[in-house]
Amino acid sequence: MKTMLVTGGAGFIGSNFIHYVLETKPEVELLVNLDLLTYAGDLENLRSVESDPRYRFARGDIRDRKAVEELFDRYEFDTVVHFAAETHVDRSIVEPEVFLTTNVVGTQTLLDAAKAHWKTEPDNKYSREYKPGVRYLQVSTDEVYGALGRTGKFRETTPLAPNSPYSASKAGADFVVRAYRETYGMPVNVTRCSNNYGPYQFPEKLIPLMIHNALEDRPLPVYGDGMQVRDWLYVRDHCAAIWTVLEKGAPGEIYNVGGNNERANLEIVRLILRELGKPESLIEHVADRPGHDRRYAIDNTKITTELGWRPAYTFKDGIAQTIRWYLENREWTERIVSGAYRSYYERMYGRSAG
Ligand code: NAD
Ligand code: DAU
Image (cartoon, rainbow, N blue to C red; front, top):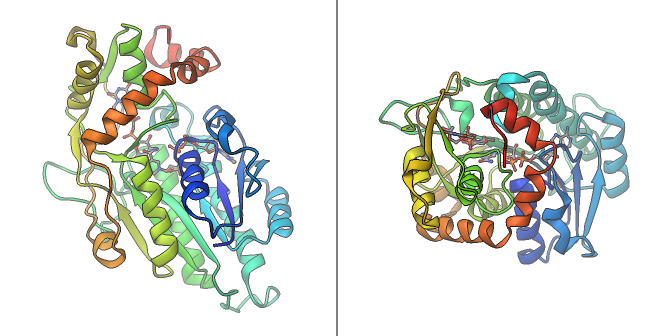
């Protein structure tokens, strides 16, 4: 892991991952961040590393075959960590197409470039030999498994049953990765993580959206009865899990990532209000999300027992740290909600974003 391509590094988890690697992994000599800078990408998230000699930014589209190949020619990556994606379920409901092209075709484009550059005999279509030490990691999601009832957890063997255009596109990408393993013998891994929270999360997602609205004394829009359950993990723990899989994961394996931390949405919203000293009367139940998955929960036995990863943050500490970060960095959210995000919010919730 000397020369690493990180895609989507200007987004929430990607930027946290870049900070994590540059701070804690001196063995990485060069990290190139390929990001299109869609509405969700923000170079502000990386301001503190932009002059780090081990870091480079390349603006580009993962669907642009020529641009991706040129990057591989130039840097000869030995590791790819693929975060770039369209990621918001609500947007996928109103605009599915870009989810399919970015998440599925973008993944295939990256895999093709990696395959061409990593094979020991690039011209031999039947060769399954790769340069030593190369690795492609697909950052997937627990949403590919669909929804759970009151009991049970997602295991790596749970059949995929995605319910939104977003999760369908992520499942499609996972199948492409699987096919490149089975057909071409590529050294790949897939990680499927539960909901992340932490600094730099775009304020369309539950936790930063609710913090922002509460700070502005605006209604907190809870979908349906608010009893949907998510399994929350602090983003830095997700970054450490990805690193663990890169280091110790067996080629071709899938690893679920989660911290056994199930919470109903209403519990999260109430906690945020309590922490910020705001009244529960700000909660507003709004129309439910179509196809809304009722419950997610990750069985993390494989990554904990086989690779030794464990979350380092308790929810109590992680959420307190997260709320503090949004309080101390209010201008970060203000900049976003004053831009193009304003019209999205109006379309989605029928009122201004503040
Ligand atoms: P995000 O929406 O915050 O960031 C996505 C990034 O990808 C942005 O910087 C954007 O500019 C970039 N991007 C989008 N389309 C691109 C394209 N065509 N070419 C190049 N760059 C492009 O996403 P996130 O929440 O950080 O999620 C990162 C990855 O982790 C995604 O693959 C997502 O499916 C997965 N994931 C997210 C969570 C979560 O809770 N957020 C949980 C599990 C898995
Ligand atoms: O599980 C991993 C997934 O987590 C990732 O793959 C996705 O990229 C990420 O967006 C996230 O998906 P969710 O749909 O679970 O996250 P979101 O923050 O959009 O919503 C969390 C829960 O809160 C969900 O049950 C819907 C609810 N919600 C969300 C918003 C934005 C509300 O009740 N009101 C809201 O305004």
